[in-house]
Image (cartoon, rainbow, N blue to C red; front, side, top):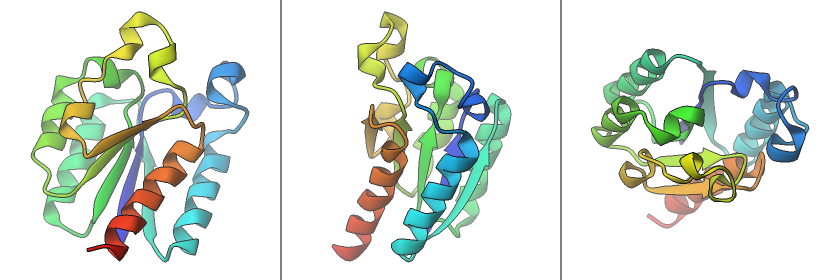
Length: 146
């Protein structure tokens, strides 16, 4: 099973951002934990980070060529307004899980709406770096029960 993981804008600044919201881990530590979890589940992951909406869309388009069984995406601030990322996800024929480190529903009003979630299989939010690990568990469960 091969999963693409996309970290959106400003996630490269983890460790510098508000630790009470985003935790203490830097992105490299999160990526290492994702990789260890994927290895334990006998999965292959490709992990990318981009601050650019167009680049995230291009990355999503590459999954149309096959080779991936699913996508885990943390769209960051694009969650709340990027119809273009939403449209790119909507055409995919593989499941996509939206994840967030913080609980977006306990934050500012503008963060409580995701335009991405309706075109995803599901959303995991508020569990810190475990949001990514839980998404990997979902894909593992799907593999084992199909």
